[in-house]
Image 1 (cartoon, rainbow, N blue to C red):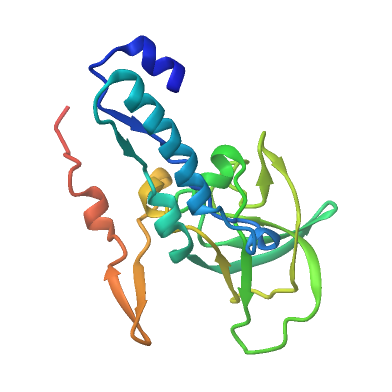
Image 2 (cartoon, rainbow, N blue to C red):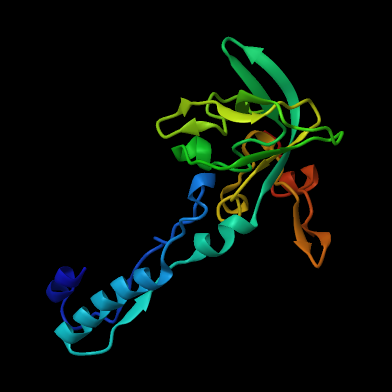
Length: 216
């Protein structure tokens, strides 16, 4: 960027670090967060070099959205079916890539927890594939880049248990869709020890409100 700025000329006023502030998606990375001071020092050094080179003040911008909100949001779904198909055990949810598209889109990893509806112990672990209800082969939450479906070591679950996908705050609602006439999910916020609805689940009437029936 410093080299490029010399070719751009003195009209340059701002440089951008983009959205490069990562969060630790994998549990084993939770204790290894980005060194914010080192990150800033690196970019500020570039900014000062550019500023000195072109002879006037240059501002530094960053897009910190994911870093600020990703870990504050979770996608909660209900396990609607548990079935064995071939060598794989599947947990099938009532949420799909319409609610969190990142795993299907580019194989991103999201941590998974399971809550037993009946309060039983969840000590027994199994290898499971977690998938949604859409009639698409890509509607799988446990896949890697390139569309390779993988299993995840998870507690042994039953129909009716709740499955939680972590770190959905940055991309969940923002990238959701009405594909297959799926309605946008409700959103709740946990604040001051209470859960409060901050967005109602979309109704079918809202889903269709802009459609027009015409005579042919």
